[in-house]
Image (cartoon, rainbow, N blue to C red; front, side, top):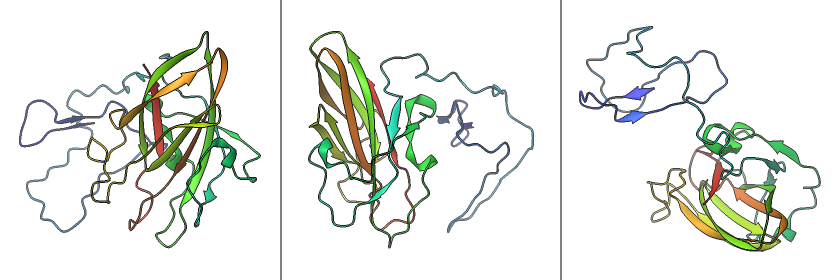
Length: 218
């Protein structure tokens, strides 16, 4: 999909791969607004390639894409997790989580949205990173909405990316992006277990409006 604003000849927005499992779809206009000079031309694609662009994360070993996750757990009044030992007892079973295009771990794909009157939910995920030596690697991370990361059971990063909370948006403008933040990941020689806890904290908003993360090592 290409989006052109104010008659520009170059696309203001280019989407190389539209997500979704439906074979057909639609464009909707809604909200308090007036629409004018709108033309729909079925089948006109203006030279767009009928095939999606290659996945930039495919074959790029910097992306952490092989995860296992638990089912959502209601947070209620629980304190934020202090270590990976805070895994709930109900998290005894793990299932594979498949990454979307670009290495995105898209939890909204697997779990339906909650209502505003329902308690926040958290999912725990884990993966293993193999290292040939003792080292520290920088990891770029993008996420929605609140995340905690642990290595060898110890916290290495936490952050919030809350779109509708004043001062709570990470660049760029509260969207999930590898520009959101980064952290140093200590690795020992051999297998290193990385554990992530992530919740769907969207206060005063209808539905989830995104729930997931992406991680890429330097």
